[in-house]
Length: 391
Image (cartoon, rainbow, N blue to C red; front, side):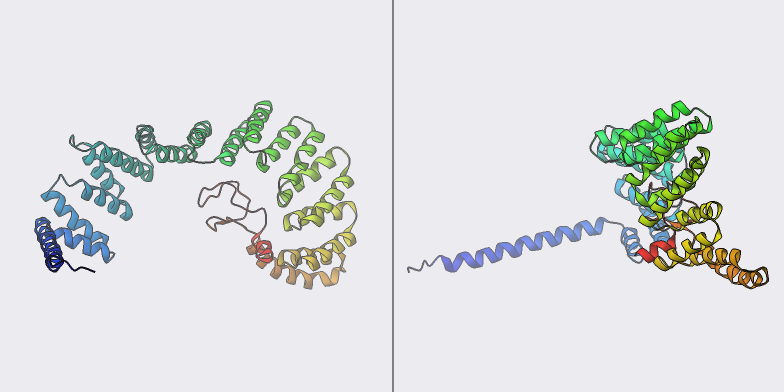
C-alpha cells in the first residue's frame, strides 16, 4: 500500500480546527453568561432546592430589570399558581398580553395560562370567554377540554354535551360515556319536574351515545313507573343485568317494589334470589333478606344469610346473620345478642362504603360522578369490604 506524506499533516490540522472551535464556543458561552443577571442563577438555585418563594423574589427582580423577558413572566405565573397566588398569576399573564410586540405563539400561551388562572380562581365567565378565543389555535383541544370542565362545574349539561361532541368530532377524545351521563343529568331534572315524556326522550339519546349506560336504563324504568307502567319499568330494570350484573344491586329494591305493585311479589323475590346466586352483593342480599322475611318467614331468611355468609364471609353479612338470629331467639337471650350485634354493626357500618377507583374517595351512597375527582362511572357498585375480598 502506498503511503502519502500529506496524511502526516491533515490529522494534526483537524485536531487544531476542533480545538479552535471549542475555544470559540466556550468564549461565547462565557460572554452570554456574563450578560445574565446574578438573580437568574439565584432563582434557578432556589427552584432546584424547592424554595419557590425565594425563587419568585429573584425572578421578580429580573423582570424589573428586563420587563421584556417573556419566558420569566411565564415562569413567574407558574410559580404563583403553585403557591395558590392566583391573583398575582393573573396580573403576570395580563401584563404579558398587553405587550404589542409579543409573538403570536406566546400570546396564545399567555391567553391559555390566563384562562387556567381564571378557572382556578372560580371566575368561570372569564375563563369561558378566554378559552373560546383559543378554539381555532394550537390550544384548541385543550381549550375545549377546559370549557367542558367549566360546563360540568356549573351544571350546564346541554353546553357540556355540545363541548364533548365537538371534542369527539375533532378526534381529540372519546367521550360517549360522559355524553350519556350529561343526558341523564338533564333527564333527572325533567323527572323532578314530572316531565316524564321529555325525560324519556333525553334518556333515549343517552342510550344512543352509550348503549351500555346503566344509569340511563335505571332512569328509563323510573320514568315508566312514574307514568304508571310498572310492567314496562320492570322490563327496563331487568336490562341492567345484561349491561352489568353487579349493578343489579342498584335496582333490586325498585324491582321488588314494582313486583309488589303488580301483585307478583314472589316472582320478584325469586328473580332477586337468582341475581344473588349469580352475583353476590351485600346490598342485594339486604333487599332479598327483608323480602324473604316478609314473604317466607324468619327461618328461611336466616338460612339464606347463613348460606351467603359461608359463600362470601363478610362482616356486613355477619351483621345480618345476628339480626336474623335475634328474631329466632327467645326473648331472654336477645339482650345478649343485641350487645354482640351493636359491636358488629359498629364495625360493619365503617365498611359499608363505596370507593372511587380513580381517586379513592369513599362515600356512604353510590355516585355516578365522584365528588372527589369529578370523574364519571368510577364507583364500583360494591362495598369496600366486598372489593377487598374479590381482590
